[in-house]
Amino acid sequence: MTLAEILDDLRRTKASGLHAETGLWVAGVLREQIAAGRLAPGTKLSEETLGDALGVSRNTLREAFSTLSAERVVTRFPNRGVFVSRPTTGDIREIYRVRRYLEPAAVTWTPAADLGPVRLAPLSLAVERARAARDAGSIPGMAGANQDFHAGIVALAGSERLDQLMSQVLAEMRLVFHSMAENALFHAPYVDENARIVSLLAEGRQSDAATLLADYLVRAEAQLLAAVAARAGG
Image (cartoon, rainbow, N blue to C red):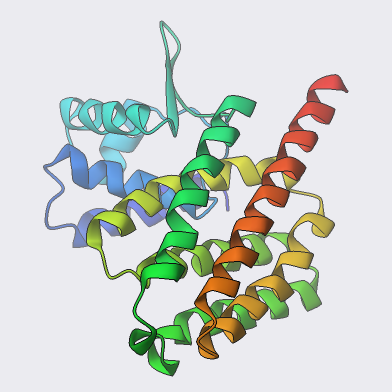
């Protein structure tokens, strides 16, 4: 997606935004763009351009930038401006530390009675989309479906606060995934593992699902750290 297309999308958001006067609303809009992979690491966020596209003041936009900076998805550089962040190895370790606490817990503590076909449907749909993307050779498609799968895992807990936390984590994760942007072998194996997690949950085997999930989060972190190290060494 080009910058012009992103700005057009933001202008449509402005027309439907009921809370465009608030920095939190703007932060949510930009976070969504980052989590969807439309704003890549290193992208400069122009106050003038974004303010015009969203129909908000610079003060409101700066409030949003402060929120996103605290979440580590944007970075301020003195005399240069605000840019979409490039996660460091420390950021990756922190992201996965949060995920290892959050996601297996959501799987473990959601009552079994709440894990029927209706509640599991979003997870199954994300797996179907990931398989279709894998068959089509679409790395962005696999990454996007994976994001939706893990958001759905946390959504099982039925907590708005946890959902909000996960949205912040996934925005950072999308930036991390740029490290693996051309590596289909990173994303493809997790498609089947996600499918296995859904099957385990459908069978009432929450403990096994949580163990599998925790294990593959450890492996994914190691792969990402190795990729970042290789890129730095190259």
